[in-house]
Image (tube, rainbow, N blue to C red; front, side):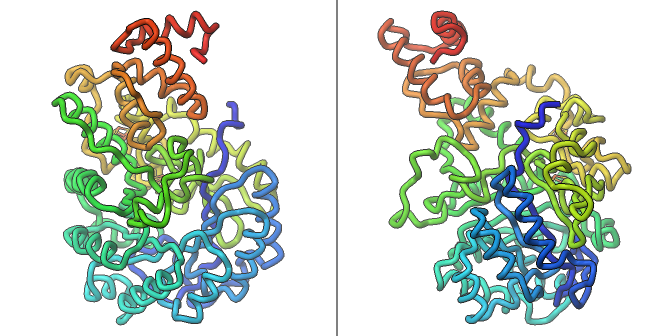
Length: 463
Ligand code: SF4
Ligand code: SF4
């Protein structure tokens, strides 16, 4: 397996399990105080050194409640000085004016705050502490007042999915840059509530379609996280719109502040066509599940997992170098090979852009390569029936992710599929070369044959 193409893009470090809340759905089993097992400050510095040695991901300091750690700002400053982009994932209840000042001064790229309802009654019931909603909202306001980029994270479950429009409304009113929704994963404390709280696959399907509609309407970065089949829903919707002759509404690249309503302050970066963490921030994550391929989770005691919800241990930074774990762990190797997927995910035409949630598969059967249990799609030759090719699926996906360059001539879906398969950084040049040739030779429609012909002329790469 060529590991060089897998680079960490987003790392979650559970800095502590200590927390001031006792949320019903928490992935961790929260402790009231920080634990002696937590990586020490020195170990944290060493971890950061090991990360920057071979990669430049976004590092999310999470917990528990990361603000419970006394040295959290020392760790963050160390990471930022090493060139990393730091994000904080917090319950927000400790962010008073003084704390917000500190967060701003430290230079966090973004702060994600969890809200599990559109109102205090729902959120506080789930968080098990009265007043936590108001404190979290206050925390968000304190951050925004100081110009800190804020994001709301919402875990969707039975108790709150009907409040999604209310939560979106709140996010827009508060002026946060992003609203990321997570589908519940039944691990950690969640195991106890899974039966009651998991939303059915059919309801998820409705939610994801609603999400697609909203993502076109609002000036906010909306992201369905840990709902890999959203990428399938989105590709299907785009292809259906195209088939019906509708001009799809253009997607504003994820992670730009333009999408968050800062049109007057920021222009779309020139590199907007190239989605990568360094230019597109926290939302640059393409594909449904990136566990072990672009994302991983480091526990409070240094154990490494594909993500915080999948308890398949890949290594331990107290015993091994992070780089070695990332490159050589068997678990990561398995997750990097979609051909190993089983059940309906294994035969699904969307698997390369979706992959299904490996943690929900694990929780259902004990095998993380098994099929995602909360996807209602039944793969078959459905795309053939509908007239979609695999290239069409890839093309719709990359278009929605903002990674396709502008096409000034008419291109067939299959021709665009060829562009989607070449490295994103040369796509613009290739498209320009093809279109220049077409214009010179009075070719109005770019087909696969046209692209192939130019490729042959240029010695393989249409450049
Ligand atoms: S396995 Fe993938 S989709 Fe599931 S919780 Fe982990 S990162 Fe998210
Ligand atoms: S069957 Fe699996 S790979 Fe296909 S869309 Fe559903 S979750 Fe994704």
